[in-house]
Image 1 (spheres, rainbow, N blue to C red):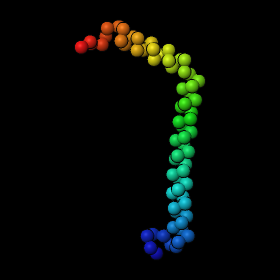
Image 2 (cartoon, helix red, strand yellow):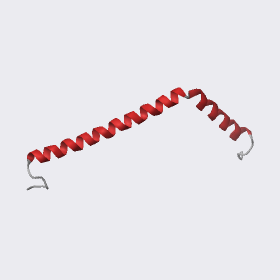
Image 3 (tube, helix red, strand yellow):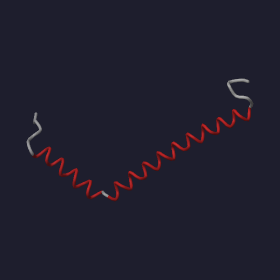
Image 4 (cartoon, rainbow, N blue to C red):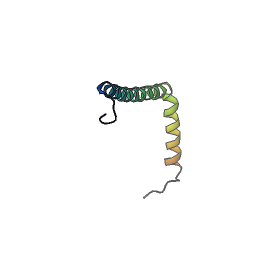
Length: 67
């Protein structure tokens, strides 16, 4: 019994599970990025107008000190 594994087959199965977990994490990350990009594309005009409004209020109101 070396390294906590009973035999070679169990060791190989453990490595396969580790690779599957890693692959699942990559897939989950890709799905999250895809969803975020889709939301950004769908709501592009609303996001742009919101950002423009926030920046115009921040920089045109004189509330920020000028150096």
